[in-house]
Image 1 (cartoon, rainbow, N blue to C red):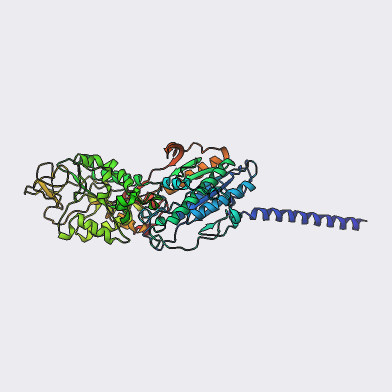
Image 2 (cartoon, rainbow, N blue to C red):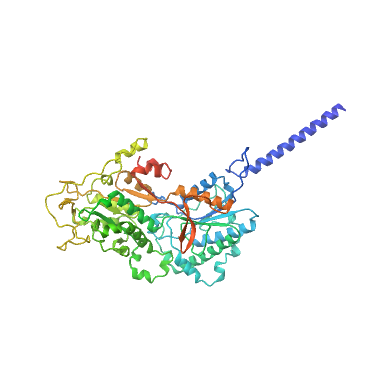
Length: 593
């Protein structure tokens, strides 16, 4: 009996052990299914799940060189994911779709909304984060992927479409779960890390300029896609989902949050502001002005205003208005200085009577390499005639144009660096900054001593003197009534001006370190990603974005929207380390350090 009892007890113990083992295995399998998600805490109250997040972004082309802007969607996506993960959002709760066309993006969005409405349970919140694929022309792409595009004309065209099936959000025979959707021009991440990467495509340099935008069929397809996208977003909001728009506004949608990225006016304004500060224009005078050139890149077709006014297909995304808006931003800052003669144009293309409407006078087609910019600058500075035109600053608009400016200045014999003008940091002190030494600040250098020969002072409008000749020929009258040469005394080589740009192209960073280009600018990408993640979590958990300092109510397209807006980051040698290297936007080697 005792033997039988012991045998039964052994069998019972074995059965209990087996049951415990199976239970442990089952639990391990359940947790293991969420690869890379945060481990559950063993102490303290469990955190409530923040719901689901669906991210729809434009797809970047594969870049074959470093001569492209730093602001790319492919760089923003991992930072947004990381910011969500840092706030305890599990990777499996993040769905991602990247697409190359508005048609593909609208289709996958409609499929996701339809599927999510079917699958959602009560109290299971969802936030859709969408940056519309607002295809830019070859000029706008020089500023980066985040530049806001005006879709007002596209919305107007969509409103004229009478086909009810075009915008009803239905998916027809393509109705399938988003995670299983084939990659037609985009990648469906299915909410999983390690999902397939986008198929290689042409680099930004190799993409066609803007042929698709001038194609009436493409114009109509985009209008249909726009209408379908609006319908899907309205359906999502009606079902209780939250909607966040990035970069480009959809006038027919009222999102819970609009995330403002740089537009043309902001890009122009930041460069003009930095130029005013660097040249100390407030200390300039009519007798001793600062000489400034503005190079405004524009497509050749857009330079003809009359043709542009009658070409409705090319205005789908309002190409041609970008340079006009960029110059408006510049003129808001520089206009007063030109008006009172404290700033003049060496080429005489701008003067006291100029205004925002005069942007065509300083615009040109930059082509696909730097040769057109070099030729344009040489013409304005009369370099082909061997002149010594003095110039204090060049607003190059973006780093692609700045590369041509820097190259031509060198060819024309300009010497020194931008640090020689009102220096804030010595170029030799930058390396010391990387090792922890303080930046070396210096006082402004004195102006060169005046020469003895008198010269006709600049005309009030900065254009022609009394004798009918252009006076900006390398000399200017100083406060004492005499003129000074463009370079140092006894030196016939003109001094290097400051050069501004935008985009933070990686291969332009060394010339910022060397002082050939004074500054560039870019979006505060990490700051935007962190604020956006917090705002979206707030929408899912509490139905509102929460108390975030960068979110305010602003008027957009005739309606007031909660808007997340961070200022652009101006980068020069003095803050290069903190702005771009400490943030991991670039490596020290990229800066030649």
